[in-house]
Length: 394
Image (cartoon, rainbow, N blue to C red; front, side):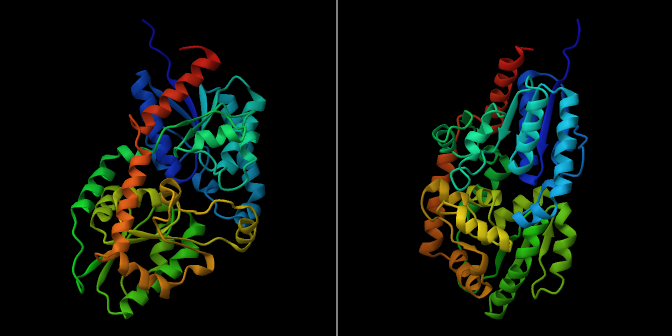
């Protein structure tokens, strides 16, 4: 009896969050098919652990801000061409592009033009409901299906003339480490005034994000310290920005514990009294873990100008968009003021109505993201349907 050939999946997963989603999907595909996985494309440490030999360093496509993209445009265009050519030559059973739409969707378009027989699925809908809504219809010729993290996104894709979408939920809702952190948080009772607290800082996973936020984070720590608060600082980060973080925190009045280990990261979530976080996927992590937090973000000058013209969403924080009301305070650009943050954070680490309202909002977020099966399993079913539809079963 001939052994069934491996399932060959091409993947583009640049950032840490996309790399994790990709790894979750690949593991689900292996479970559902019982076949070995053969991976080609671009990814980080999580996909590499599953056998991907990344075409180039995934950090190359983890850029923040329009200015950064324009500055690196020649290199990005080379990388897009390189990835598309390698994937087309590999003739995968399916191409899955994950988040990073300005890179991944350009690769998808080139692959579709070179070989229309390859099914293409995009994981994480672009924020068409927030800005550049025309991207929905533009995707339709070269994306067969979109795997959506947010419950309202499939209808938005339909309304805007985009590809079909399926709400798969988020892998975090079934993550056992997340569940353990949430259980620990819900069992906690806020400490009394004067107690020593634990402040969780999350300045982002991109170098640009860290460079823009690590200074204000340090100033906030200094403001809290000078106000007489006693606290420890926990700072989870990822390997490619760790040296930048370590250099930046050397002179802080409270030296943070820099965390690279995944298990220690989740125990830090369980222990934290409050968090200050860069807007992004980590906002969902904090909400689902029930950690009270403030969301902040800083863009470059060009990104700020373009954002004011094009962004239509009322909030940049995912928990707020999912719940439909301002669950989480968010400060953007010139409003990221350490003196303000140092007065807001203590309102969230104490037993206050502000803290309680956030906790209630987090419960709404968790309920809205709930799915009958884990996100990776639903996503894998969609990918396998697309493969069967394009090339026939097997």
